[in-house]
Structures are given as structure tokens and as C-alpha cells.
Length: 119
Image 1 (cartoon, rainbow, N blue to C red):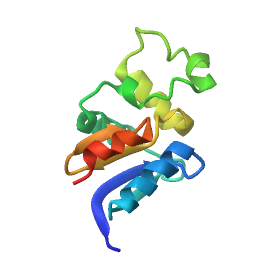
Image 2: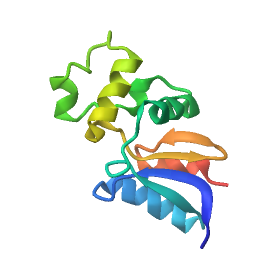
Image 3: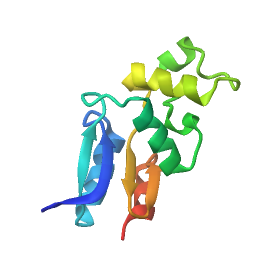
Image 4: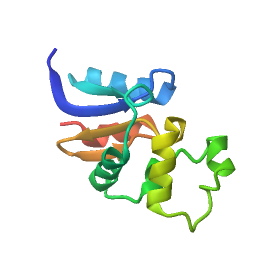
């Protein structure tokens, strides 16, 4: 199956991320998979994701991660730049899975969110 114009920012250890990949494949979509813990996302890549999502950086922040509070990122006054810098430095803070598609981009938590991006 050829890789499509869908991109999945994926963590194979994450059940939600695995579910999203399964939903895409069931729909006949083989996404380009970015293993963001191996292919670290830099500031321009994270800024582009925010733009594609149409949301502030906080949408990409995994707020349940203990490191989020340890770094003070759970405060309301933290800038988008500070959040994205922290995610770039600590990929475990990335709120996965994220899917970018011709129909838009979404943080797919819960995994059923990906269905809005299906053709």
C-alpha cells in the first residue's frame, strides 16, 4: 500500500496512537509515520503543527505528564514559545497522536477524533 498524504506523529508504546494507526489503516490509508521520539521535532516543525491545527501550542502539550508541572508549563501565563521549546527538548511532553491530512490536522485524543479526517 503506498504511503498517502496523511502524516501520523506516532508513539508505538501509546495505545491511543496505535488505535489511530489501526483506524487509518482500516480506512485504507497508510500514513507517513513520524516517530517523534526518534525524529525529534524542532521549533519550526512544532510551529507548523500549531498552524495546521489552528490552535495554540498548549494543544500539543501533554499536560498529564509529570514533567509538565515540574517545568511550570501548567501555568496559564506560559507562552507558546516556551511550551514549544519544552516539547522540542522533552518529546515525552508531545500530546500524541497527531494526524495531518488533506482534511486538516487534529490531536487525536480520543482516537475516534481521527474519523473526522477520513475521506
